[in-house]
Length: 73
Image (cartoon, rainbow, N blue to C red; front, side, top):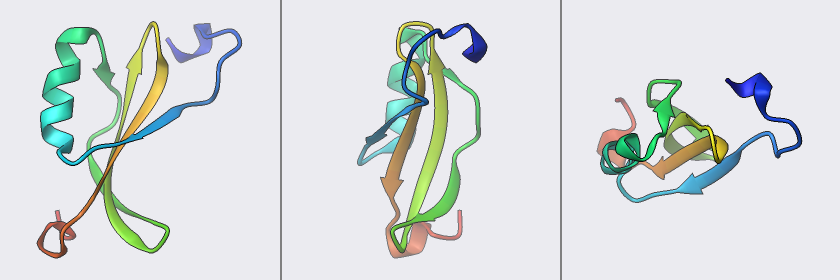
């Protein structure tokens, strides 16, 4: 799927306050999750992130800053 995108940015990154709710909202709109949500560090902050793919938007990364108690998920 990804290789069919001709001239597009590598991916778009969007910040959300509720990653799980956004994943549920975007699924019926044609976004396919291509990675499981994982905790990573971006600019020194614990962040949950997940990649999705859409035929119209291409590769999309959703990120959400973690509260202290979410960092171990």
